[in-house]
Every structure is written in structure tokens, then in C-alpha cells.
Length: 81
Image 1 (cartoon, helix red, strand yellow):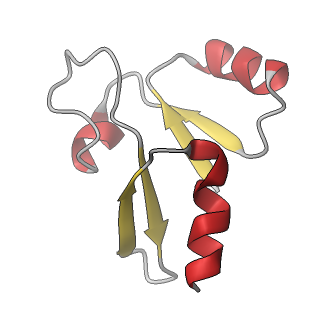
Image 2 (image 1 turned 45 degrees about the vertical axis):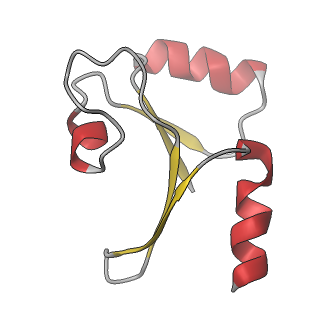
């Protein structure tokens, strides 16, 4: 699993350490990833929308979910499989 944030790597590292984040957190300061995945409308957006994407082995999006409860999202997705 990966997470993506608009924050710089240093802030992401501090966040991950503080909250014992269980997966890699990537920085998207340019907003390129957020724009490509529809989590931002423009490069001026201050915060991305929270989405969870399930990406298959072929690199295609299998499922896209509006993330209402980040803590429960993984268990919910695994229960569907």
C-alpha cells in the first residue's frame, strides 16, 4: 500500500513517525498524481480529496472509493474479495 500527500518528504516522514503510519507515504508537491487520479481539480488545491484506489497487477484501476473512514477502508476492501 502507498499513500500520497501534497506535503514535502520531511513533513510526510514526521507524520509517519508520529502516527506509526503502516505504509509508505509519497510526496506529490507538484499535484501531478492528484490531478491524474482526480483527487485534485487544479494545482492550486490546498488539499487532495481522499480516495482509495485498488490497482491490479496490470496497472489498471480495479476500484476507486471515496474514503470516508481511512482506518476501516483496507478491511472493507479485503472483505469484498
